[in-house]
Length: 173
Image (cartoon, rainbow, N blue to C red; front, side, top):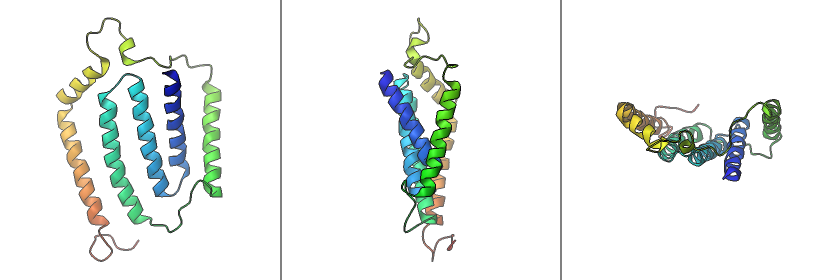
């Protein structure tokens, strides 16, 4: 289990480097999907089951809107990839920054890798993520409904903006 958690952490960092170093929206959106998948996998390995599923679905819905909007605005015939010198230099700079941070914090952090939510309290009757789900639906139920309507409204706004150069609200930029 710790090996899988380390794999998820490395995938999360690699996805963040892809998002930060890539100027093309196509590959940056793919990097965001990888980051959300690895982050949710990391939360699942820590003991949560329901919240990572909800976050992954929200991230995928948001990434669909962002990808449609960015691909409509920046339709490049030849987008920059990992082989481009600018992207490679940016990637090396970000990986160097991550390695510098790891070197700086290497001995100071004493957290346990692989500690799940259920190992925090010894005499708990229910799982840790079940209490979070109950709290989300009791206190945050209205926020979930408002968030769903905002995402739906955002989807319709983006579809209207990128509908076409002749009938849409956005002309050639």
